[in-house]
Image (tube, rainbow, N blue to C red; front, top):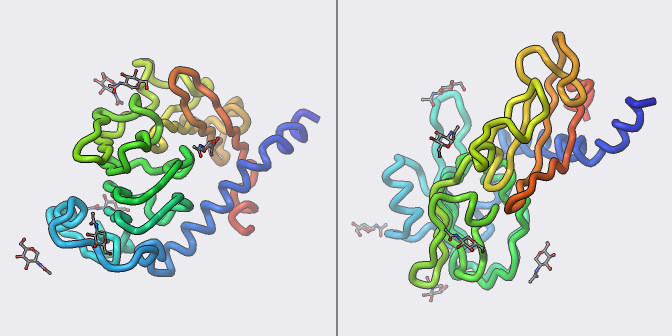
Length: 233
Ligand SMILES: *[C@@H]1O[C@H](CO)[C@@H](O)[C@H](O)[C@H]1NC(C)=O
Ligand SMILES: *[C@@H]1O[C@H](CO)[C@@H](O)[C@H](O)[C@H]1NC(C)=O
Ligand SMILES: *[C@@H]1O[C@H](CO)[C@@H](O)[C@H](O)[C@H]1NC(C)=O
Ligand SMILES: *[C@@H]1O[C@H](CO)[C@@H](O)[C@H](O)[C@H]1NC(C)=O
Ligand SMILES: *[C@@H]1O[C@H](CO)[C@@H](O)[C@H](O)[C@H]1NC(C)=O
Ligand SMILES: *[C@@H]1O[C@H](CO)[C@@H](O)[C@H](O)[C@H]1NC(C)=O
C-alpha cells in the first residue's frame, strides 16, 4: 500500500530521469544543436572566446567545445548566445557541462529557475541587467551589474548555504550541488530506497530540489526501484 502511494507521487521525477537519460543518449551521438541556435560564431575577443582560447577549447558555432580525455566525447564548456534576439530561454540541457554562458544583448523577459538545474560546473554568466542570477544572488559569490550586463560569478554550493552540510537531505544520504540554487541528495554507502531507509545492495535514491531564498523545498523525491527498467524506457 505504502509503496503504491509513493510510486504514484514520484511519477514526474521518473519522467525527468527518463528525459535526462534520453538527453545523454542523444548527446553522445550527435553534434550539439544548441551551437547552431543562433547565427554566426563566437566572436573574436568576446569573453567566451577568450575563455575558450585559455581553456584550449574549439569554437563551433556559438559553442566552445573540449574533450578532457581522448576517450571522452567533446562537450560544451562555453556557450555564447549573446545578441541573438532571444525573448525566452528554453531548453539548454545540451550545455549542462558549460562553465560559462553568455545571454547578454537579448530581450529576455524571464528565465525559469529550472533551466540551469544540473549545471554543476557553471561558474560565470552574463545576462541582461534586469534578469537576476539563477538561484538568486545567494547562489553566487558575486552578482553585479556592469556596463549594462549582469554578471554572476562563482557558483556557490547550495548544500553549504546554511553552513550546515547535509541538513537538507534525509538521514543516510549526502547533499551535493546540482546547479545554482539546487541540490541533490544521494544515498550514502549501502543505503537505498525511499528516503534511504533500506540497507543492502540496490540502486541509489536521488532526491533533488530547489532551494528558495531561505526555505528548503524538496520538490522531487525519486525512488528508483528498478534502474534497469527505467533505462530501457
Ligand atoms: C582575433 O583577434 C586577434 C587579436 O585581437 C587577432 O590576432 C586574430 O587574428 C583575430 N582572429 C580572427 C579569426 O579574426
Ligand atoms: C579521464 O576520464 C576518466 C574517467 O571518466 C576520469 O576519471 C579522468 O579524470 C579523466 N581525465 C581527465 C584529465 O579529465
Ligand atoms: C548585434 O548584431 C548586429 C548584427 O547582427 C550588430 O550590428 C551589432 O553590433 C551587434 N551588437 C552587439 C552588442 O554585439
Ligand atoms: C516569469 O516566470 C514565472 C514562472 O515561469 C512566472 O510566474 C512569472 O509570471 C514570469 N514573469 C514575467 C514577468 O513574465
Ligand atoms: C541580494 O538580494 C537581496 C534581495 O533582492 C538584497 O537585499 C541583497 O542586498 C542582495 N545581496 C547582494 C550581495 O547583492
Ligand atoms: C562551506 O562554506 C565554508 C565557509 O564559507 C567553506 O570554508 C567550505 O569550504 C564550504 N564547503 C563546501 C563543501 O563548499
